[in-house]
Image 1 (cartoon, rainbow, N blue to C red):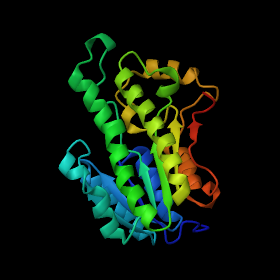
Image 2: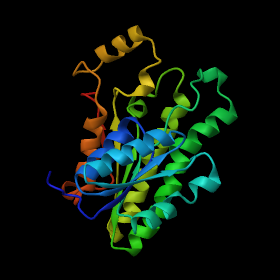
Image 3: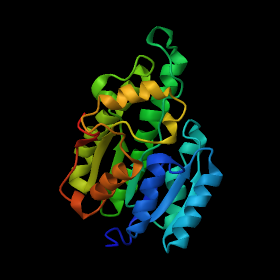
Length: 249
């Protein structure tokens, strides 16, 4: 491996499975020291840390429920303490908190979707930004969703709306960060083959895949490679951009 990220210290949220797991593994293989953040899947996070260590990398697992303010507010500081600094933040953690038809959405459901998918990433980014600004700069990558382009499904409007807010956070932070070398971008994954789809109707998923120009699911590794590019030297002159990695959608 090129070890293009040697010496970098990066926090990846939601790193115990799916895109976050693939990202943490790839960044570590490129030489970065990584915080593998998890919400509830401690065993999976610690297994990944052991795997990274076994391959000669550096990683530490840190748990925090991002819907709990007291846990969320200390995550960046704990990561900085564990790694001895912070050069990158990948705001990957997010999900449809509860799929709900539009006419049945409650204020609580709307707020929970925004709390996890827009509010938490912003305040983590705010804390990371402050540290990066004081230490010569850094990179922040926010993981959005192709749902922003299409408005989500009939039961995920609250989720896609929150992700659209996250894209607004991305462009705003990029403007604030440019003068101090804090580069901020977002990625819109398309339909990715992760465990989140395991409970969905297979026929519905076949129809969904048929709509993708490349006619297949994406993989977590394909998203991870884009993240690694933006955090690495390839991203030196890129900020304020939204990149779709979605098979042509």
